[in-house]
Image 1 (tube, rainbow, N blue to C red):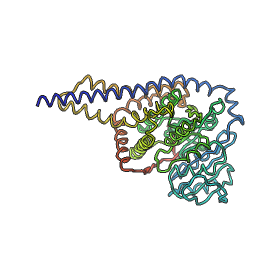
Image 2 (cartoon, rainbow, N blue to C red):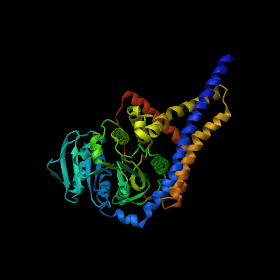
Image 3 (spheres, helix red, strand yellow):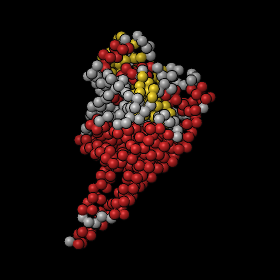
Image 4 (cartoon, rainbow, N blue to C red):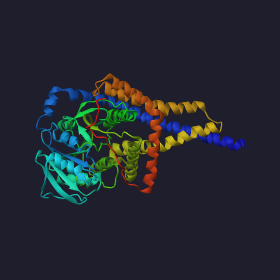
Length: 475
């Protein structure tokens, strides 16, 4: 019996050290991204504040752009967000909103508030989509085109908008998103710096808790509800050092579907958005990288921190569970379908750095973390726990993550400082601490569920219930 117990003890110890090494390497990767993000943030901050550059941004040098806005059951937010799109400070742009077979009053609200009237279907069809019922123009806004079509999902709606887009650059945005007045202008910065840009992404911030008037965030605040506050920390961490760090490494494979600009010709070349994928934005970027590399086309996909779009995050655990499960299921599907890019030099830094990091780090992290959470208590129950190892696991898995979250808040406080109240930053620090005790373990379960649904071939999105912008409090 003692021989069996000793063998079990050695097995558990080896497993614990493997888990510890995994999280040490993963969090060290995040730390490297943080280090790289600091000079990147400094550069963008000074460019954004340069008065001469701001004058150039207001010129006609920026390329005309078409905003593609898929909408499904968005009656609470669609008017405010559409107005924000139409009134952006940009030399020349159009808004193409696609009602994807909504079951609520989305279409009726659009017809009423924008005085829509039907126009002939004189548009080319390059990408096949679900049937279009009608096209509408607005008597109030000449730049608005509304497509009413049968339900086909977000990717299908974006393809319908791509078909009718008039301009060489397209900006994919969500109907539940509010964009700062100068955000689109700032998003076009790389085009004026002589870069060969295939796509560019902007920052997504959390609108919960902020005061919104006429489709604009007039007082940015952090929601005092713990669930929304913790998600605000997550967004700061993901955008302010995660994606900025990948800028320096040259392998950004995530441009948020809620706010990103692309060359239309490239999207058409890769047959647009892939239907059936629940994270069509990441899948699109990976396929775009593949297309550019395989055809030896130079093209950067940078992230710009100061163009800001605001989105409503889930206010209940039920809705959060659907969102996070879908996000991770989409991550699994995208990385698995493009696994041949792993460690392939043809795909440059994406194949050698980004894909391995997301595949072995982001995708597999829930499985490894679950194993670690089981192994330590099991060792304790058998009386063979190594308490020094358990403490190291806690420091690496929790303490390291807490440090990165706090640094995300600090980067915001000392850079663009969108929150003007000191109490907001104090609350963010509280949320950064609380996140590790309960919330993180809860979202771990959601991400583990994604593996089960992926194995079953599940492709559903799940219902995303929203409060709407009109009821936003100031604090």
